[in-house]
Image (tube, rainbow, N blue to C red):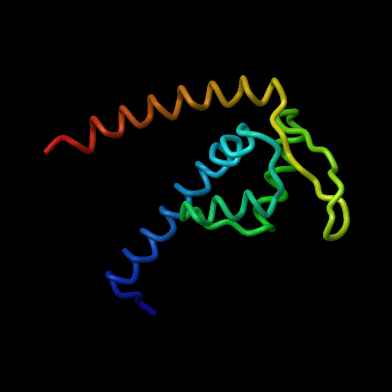
Length: 119
């Protein structure tokens, strides 16, 4: 069965967009948490409002990986409306890591803008 070229292109664009978004998810999560203690649903809400689609099945493994790398920590805070909630915060190692990512991000933005702005 042969897939029409327009459908192949649409599928390739969609795949590339997904990969691009996945590539910046960790960076965005670290930035959000760098502002202060964050509950998971708040992370999802901010990412979603910024049009970075994420589900709990993607976010929880990422948070666990960042915690195991000692970039994040968490603490339990009592909730008036139910069980205690886990709030994430950046460690010192996480802050240093994020500073390095910020430099890389700014370099990439500059390089990309140089390339895409040429006619």
